[in-house]
Image (cartoon, rainbow, N blue to C red; front, side, top):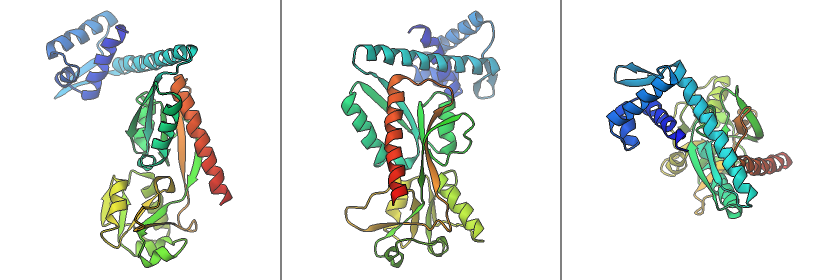
Length: 304
């Protein structure tokens, strides 16, 4: 594993864009780190960083080196997990990039279920928007992604897809809460608490509003779905979310109502991985568990 150490230092410098900052992060002196990088460049036969005002960045050769390291690290983790499986004891680490909507209910339940059977497996969860999740897969920072309405899908292998209708979040005493389904135009007449434009829910809402000749002008725009849920309790406003991130509040003060598909088309919650990558055993098996759970949800939605 020692041969990975220099590559880890290169990755740290690339991430921070600064020799000094990377040295602090890796508990080295800046001069020691610089010697390691210089020594690698000499052995490799080519510089991998270019010096720019205020720091450094990878040059094209460095990008290739870092990509090779990440692929090698992923392959090594896959071999480690396969060896652990030979002894009947599954170990490994699963890294996930996911939308906020998966954090409160779905993902904790799925991780706990997997760890009940395989307590030697650890997890890291990175909260990412649509574009960031795909970048995480491409850089091997995450093994799998679970995102709503991803942006590009060029190198994204879809493992499972579940339609999700956008729901309005409102106070239970709001007159609109008495209706089983809401029209977008009437929701836009009320103050809106909306996700930032980089999120899939907002993308669908903005597109639907334009079709109606309207514009969504939120009184509060945020990256936090938790803030959206809580703020509507303080003002007679309407927030928006997908149902996988919603559960009835224990005190009954919130109501969730689907927006009519005549106005807002359902979006897609997609589980995927980097196309062509062979995942480590733990990640591959967890992806299979997620795909099965999402498949069940899709059939429940279809039967309702």
